[in-house]
Length: 226
Image 1: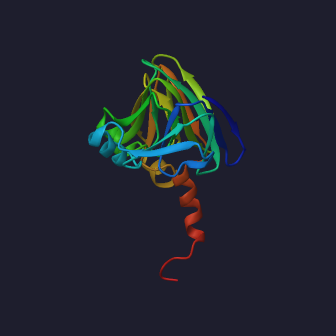
Image 2: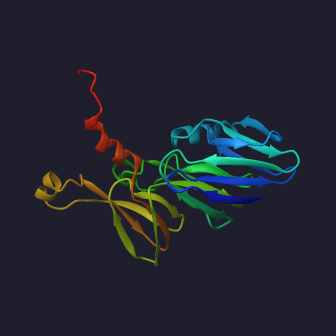
Image 3: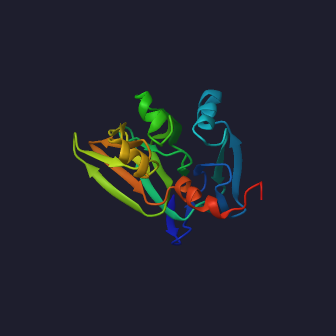
């Protein structure tokens, strides 16, 4: 499989597949393809994994696209930002935000990832269930806005505002920290909790979480009462 990523605000990854090569994606991610790409909708991994994907904010089913001869298929981002490429392999899993997965080679397995600490899931802003990419192959992940990467050393920590974590290597861990001081909580505008990431491993931070953008725009939309 060969690929290239084009575009700036709304990027797209264009993949060229040889005969028999297959890619998996969430429903609706395919933007265009050649006629010799054959689609199959599947609950890959059985009903258990399918339900897990649903709880992680993704579709119950995955689409498989297989080339019959040399084929081309493109997957477009759904929000202004970046598309990142990851080489998934045994021992090098990736944890991504809900709705972050775009597409991957067939050898990549998409499953749910439960936060080990209940507090991190309930208050960390990333959701109690994240997505885990494992197996073998290339995977493409959507990031909202610009992506800043940090490579944390063992025990090194970074504090993130809610929703800014796009992805992290599975060697990293997540916890939540309450904002200190009543005045900071009431007037600081940062909410009650921040997300604390501890290394070792790389973390990928997005600069425009879609939920934050929605909050900024909400006052400008007409309400039902008006």
